[in-house]
Length: 164
Length: 404
Image (tube, rainbow over all chains, first blue to last red; front, side, top):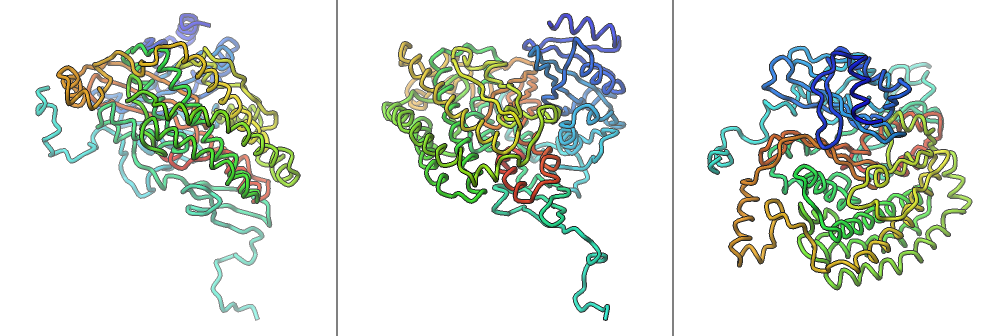
């Protein structure tokens, strides 16, 4: 199994997959948010795919990508052939709904709760989508880029101070 | 008379089960997390774990920090084996910039990482013994964890949260004293480990408490994304050191111990056997290093490797590079990289997105503890409460890693 064969087979079954890349050797692609569960199930069940290990699931916020600000990243691993792939799904910040992967991977449960907790991505079909690391009363999603780490009025760490 | 003088919660008299609180600060949890358990006599019916008590927002902090300042954050994930986290982070950056690391540095790192693995497994296994009522083995092996910490001290100056090494290698070469302590350790520790095993491996009480407690099948463990000793105890021989070798692990010969039933006893045995394998690796690394140039302890990458402090004060070139690194003048490649290492608890992954700036655009830690601890309610339900406590310590849940 090589990146090339995965790419070929997957793009035949799911023509909507885009953004094929291979950063540092790991095959990366993105699928439309609505198809995420279908693709995960296909990757899990198909004889020649067998991506049955969910290594990681997390979110990224790109405020500049209008209409698809939030990204959900899945790292999948085929343990038999020892191949890793990375799958991305983009959703908008206004309507951050995506299917939950908990029906395929039990381990996705807390990873999705964490992603919800920090990015506000709404995993539909999740059995118990609550905050996990932050307090329940919190009413914002702190890993989004609009919440700066430090006092935004502080000038001494701005790039222009360093001639950048 | 049906009237009660003490006000009881509604239906509490009719209720057949009891709700108890284990944690957040409970001696049996060995860390700050809470379990609300529903028990029927001694049987656990359900568990509701609550975590996040020591969440420190490392992923957010990292977005504002230059790369070399993120190493101390990784210390505080799994603080029982901090050097593995540190070196995993250095490897991530080195992969991002495509840095060539000399063999000697890679082998030195292997020695440190395997020492850290031993230190971590010592804690976990001896604490299983403590939770089953045997305090003595704990006091014996902890002397040897102390000796490992003394080796760290010789190398980097600190003990628990080590901040060991730098991007590109180590801040200084191993001293004579460090090598001496390392030799003392590899000579003395096998004797202690044998004694430790003799105390517990076939101990009737220990076996009765551990065999069959908190089991998980290989299939469920994989579905729960288990990694590390907990997965291997269930019978899956997945080890990052073998499957995606880093830091020249492919040069070493060692076995991956696996269990069969995935219960507490198997997890204990797997960790013990791994300590023997780690010793094997350390011995091989010491041998391999002998043939290499003893003065090499970092890569030749002045753009990213922070120069020695003494050189910064005396050499113009070192001062310039120091300034460039600290002020973030060096350009980093734009890209995304996933680098994983075999932490003491499992696959510790760093998912880094760089936009070319001086700090990460996004950094995510794949924390093995966080991922496998969610299986805890499933593993212990139906078992005895005391089995639940032993299971908790055998899973080796480290609160720092759980909460990031």
